[in-house]
Structure formats: C-alpha cells, structure tokens
Image (cartoon, rainbow, N blue to C red; front, top):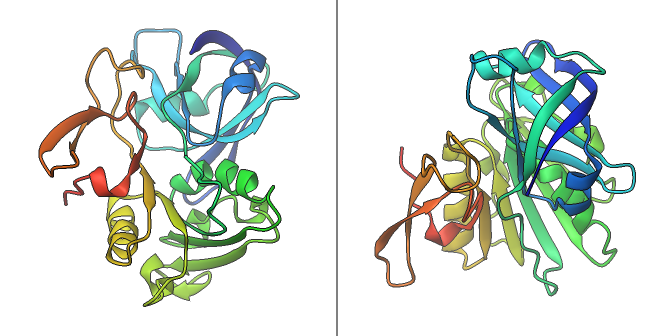
Length: 262
C-alpha cells in the first residue's frame, strides 16, 4: 500500500448519457504492485469538501509504463469533483488496496458476469485469463441501455461476449440471467456490478455447485480497515453470521460467504 501524488494523463467523459468518465494515472510504484480486483482511494479535491477519499476499482494495469486506469460514474459530490480535474494535474492516490480475484490453475471454462461500473473492474481479470490459450472465457454484460455497457471493445477477442440491456438497445432485452443456462459447465464464475445482479449470478453458481467470486462495493472512509466503515454481513463455514471489512478482507469474496440483502 502506497500513498503518492499521481499525474493525471487523461480524465474524460466516455459515455455522455450515462455520465461515465475514464481517468488514466501515472503511478509507477502502485502499478508495479497492483493485481486485478484491487482498488485505489482517490482524493477528489485539495479542499475540505468533499473530505473523504473515493474508492475506485482498477480498470487497467500497465506495470511496464506505470499507468493505471479507473472508470467512474458521475453520482455525487466526490465524483463531480473528480470529473473537474484536468490532464496534467496531480491527484493523491492510495493503493493498491484490498484482495483481488483468485484464479485456480485448473479452471479452464470461465464465466464473467458484470454490470455498470463493475464491468470495468472485470476487464483486467479477463485480460489475465486470456493469457492462457487453453481457457474458454464467456462474458455476460448487463445494463440499462447501450450507454451503460462500457469497455466491451476492450475485452479479449477470444472471449464470447453476451449482452443484455433493459431497453433492448444492445444485445437481448432483459437482465443478464437471460444467458444463465440450466446446466452450466463452468469451472468458476466471477461477478461484479449491482447487488441484485451479483445475487442472481451467485445463486446460479451455487445452485449448480460452481465456485463463484463476487466483488462488493461499500462506502469507505480509509480504504485499509481502520475506520470499519465498510463492514458487510458474511457467514463462516458453520453458517454463523460474522462481519468483514470490504476494503480489507475484500472487495472480492467467495459468493457462499456473502449475505445479499435487498
């Protein structure tokens, strides 16, 4: 975990209607340590408002050039402040943080299920998986409209990509579970996105005895486990309720450990 002032190489809107932004940073030390599934804490402004850093999943890692990318959606004061930063300015960055995706060596047929800004978090995982030519990768992406399906051109060409949108503007009309086969043959399923979508993916996996990992999002104060502001309800091997910090024990969890509340 490192705290650094990173140079902003790019900070631009990439989806106008859905208000998605791409920020590319030069942070060589963090890029050398980062793995898919981890996140960064970005300081939105130098003033007192907004005061807290904002957690951002890593969208791209280039350890050679020292560059990192994050994609965020304009939602509140923090992301509004981030969107006003200009190319060439610096931003305080803490990272890499949290536990990333775990990839079993024996997993050859793999499914990724993503929605919203969670799609961006799955991209580094997909690129890592594609380095093994023996793997078959299926990617299921969902969103309100075509504007909400980000990064689809960046996923590995070898992967089969299936898309569902609520308005039918891209792919099939409906939710991601349109593509959930009755008897899937996957070795593992990964999911990141809105909670209802991850719940469906987890239920699908667990009902078919397929390992599943999910990446959770929670409001965070510090990003490294001290403030205990991002606790989520989980269960241990005996089924007893316990609480874990999304920033420290997560953000990636085995799906069978997570209680998905409405």
